[in-house]
Image (spheres, rainbow over the protein chains, first blue to last red):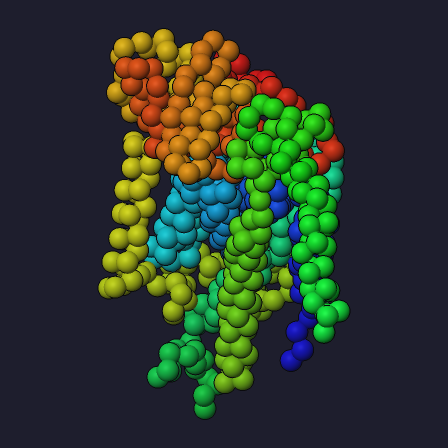
Length: 240
Length: 107
Length: 187
């Protein structure tokens, strides 16, 4: 059976091409940064990762509210996918930041407000995913995931605004187009959009996988369905 | 043979003649910019760290030297993260689809 | 017999069959491998993971945030404390004063002054400074001030501004981004 082309691949391919172009610009074309030298090129990876981690988790928050209302398996699947991608981005963000801090700040880690809240973000959303595995059935799993996501989301605005609320820390306040060289804008924006598109693609693919599993679930729970010795689904009536 | 001997005695003389040129070449090096003494040693109008051409690599002038390994670490790690997760979900989806196809066939 | 995928719900962007909503929400409907509650080792693992997560959250909030609401003191604030500050472990943050850096690589000895609008404190460090370290940049030093008024530090951190400029760009000079407080953070 030939499977139809999954439309989200278009988003993925565009994202991949944009990331390739953005990273090529960032690594080989733009001039080395004043004071930072070559190390400044980490900027083009770290800043888009941060934006998109917060953006994707905001998407999770919206999906969580929607899923609580409509109780649709597709929303549950998309919610789980987006939380997983958000955790991936946040984990990368924290590690990237730690590596970048070594040559610039002179340290791997310090208990600065921004760094603490970002670490809390990672732990909180990893907690959302582990809460999911505790649920007894799919309906409960949807509820728990959605509620946990909404609770964990409290930290997202805190992470974003903490550099304004507690300006004393080692992390930089928000940068603006005026504080970043115009030479750097294009590569930065390409990488940011690319990572958003790739995040959406990964969320869609993960959601598809979950829905595929749901289909198998429905099969095994269908009337007359039974499991054979290997644990595979057998449907009565087809056997004779 | 005699000619050769005179040639040999000439060598020190030649070296002596050449040596002032060597001293001349070395003299600007004495006036190289010292990057932390508040003096414009090389006379180009720029003092200490402001003399970017000569002092950018001086440790307390605040310019990171090299550092490509940090860049490679961050980009490599990020690409590995994206690729690893993409591979994980792609394989998972394919496995689930194959299972479904097998089940359909079994019916 | 109706096959389950005939009444299946589809993703807005997909055509693949999935479980119907009724089956999805019924308590019996569960994947034979994926959906069942974690048992034995699996359940223990999840429980341990949750406990570790909760403990580290508490640790972060209690140990981290509380102590770090004021991440560093400015030279003015430390000076204002007077004798009370002597010997206490604190973070001091300010700008590196112009023409104050004395770096002797042979002895790994670094002396400089940290200043804000109102005060200036002499800092002695015995480690190699980060390469970003220079006059006029923000620094945060961990250590304590002695009765001689000299701040001895074991840990020197650079705090650069939010400017990411290329060669040839106009850079803001003589910024003081280190003495911001809650009141004037709008700048």
